[in-house]
Length: 338
Image (cartoon, rainbow, N blue to C red; front, side, top):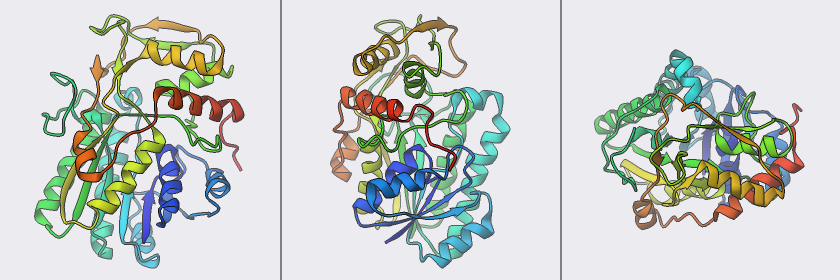
């Protein structure tokens, strides 16, 4: 089966392409390279033995999408392309709504024109807003505390309405918790452009000497050590979740919603301590003010995905930080530009 993967050269997209190839699928990548590098294609080949077809195009370019969908006989789409930083979204809300919401609408319109009716959407646990309790199940109320989360929630609502009106479509919303880790080979990993917006790549860059210290946003949350608690999930487990969704519910018309998380919460300080153990060196950090839009704690109840998709996160916290360190220590500057 040929699968169009928007944002396929990005962090989660590239790891998912490797797992797609391993499972016998043929990924076709569409990416505008705004937050990724073409060098990742060589790494995918090193690990998998295959180089996916790559099309440099923006997800808002309908003509390019229709051409890709038609010329490559695409049967399903996995949609990763989008901006993803909470802090940046507060500063640039219009760009987030244009990329994430408008981009998805253009993609679905192109799919409709090309007759492709299977879509897996990269959503986020941010659609739960500031949850009243944890762990979080898929039937929790949805809301948003920042433009990034609101853009994901808007897309979910648009796709829900569209699927109701087009009952022969299969649309799956995968609500990720916090992806971390790297491919165990050390060949692929998270390589953010500029200053990292997520904790793990920031910690890794401090460990490798690229940055002086980790900024810990807030130490006065009502949590075990005052820092934010999140459900960190290994990117390989996350990639496998997409394969499971493609195989189990991709062929079934309907709207399918799943949490992808471990069901365990770890604080920022716990993550730093775990990384210190993996890297065998201290990780300097400083407490700074809370970040607008952040919440105290958030972790998943992943039992629905376990029951319906046969999927379960299997990587431990040690595996997450060890793989992150392997990637960063062997690629201190990330991917090359070639």
